Image (tube, rainbow over all chains, first blue to last red):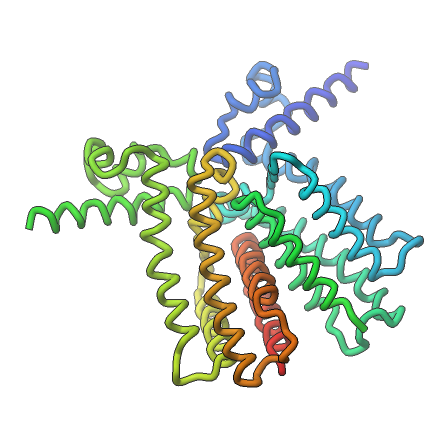
Length: 197
Length: 197
């Protein structure tokens, strides 16, 4: 029981701390603010994390591992064709954003990457690995689309996955600053054009 | 003379302060650190700027207005065809990054947008306007490419400009975290494929 409480406390600090860091940036989020948000004493932080950098690294993994798993599952859904999986997945995300009355989009990776990539190569490499893993998953699904005749045989799936993944990240940046989903609808429209046999 | 010295001091604070804010994020860059970087007393800051938010807004304009102007000029270069202008412009940027021994890419917009869009709608709107202006310039050049028969007549130039602009922003994020230009080379390769009659 004791170890499960400990695990919960670590998870709590990671979840609340990632929120604070997403909103205030890495430098703007002190350890004091992180423990306050989690409602734990400062000593707890250093019990679980060697430093703020170590915290950010573990938080990245905690936030993105389940997301990547869900993405991989969606891109392997046996009930849909590969093309349907891709268009369905992004289409649902766009609808999700469009449904929100007050559009808020938080991106932990976005907050960390610009501020910290240079100061902490470890954090930069972790963000890079997460983005690469995501592009790899998409590439796998594009290759299945190609095998199923849904995508032209000469298409370079690695290149296409890289371009689509970057366009999605860029569209999310625009969503963040405009609170307008038009740029996401543009993305879906172009995705439909790109995914053709 | 007095007024030109004042102008220089304002420009100095804007330039040095934007650097500090790019590296440390909005919350991580205090007014104290901004004036220290510029080598001016704190009073100078409040002589020119009503607040840190006002400073960031003016810094965005100071940094991006000349960049947008250069982009618009390149996209209107009468010595090149529209398609050549676009491929040439991005190609040169990628070569510029590839030539650097220790690759460093700083993005003031990237640093500000994730941290501040929600807290300051004014800053969010300014970043959005800069990104939109950039997409509009590209759209204008794509329309010229279309008129010149370099791009298919049915192509939706607004949508294509939006997608390419977002893909470029996303590629720069990957560059930032990976210090590897491969993702930019991927971008150029796809750009060549997209810009075909």
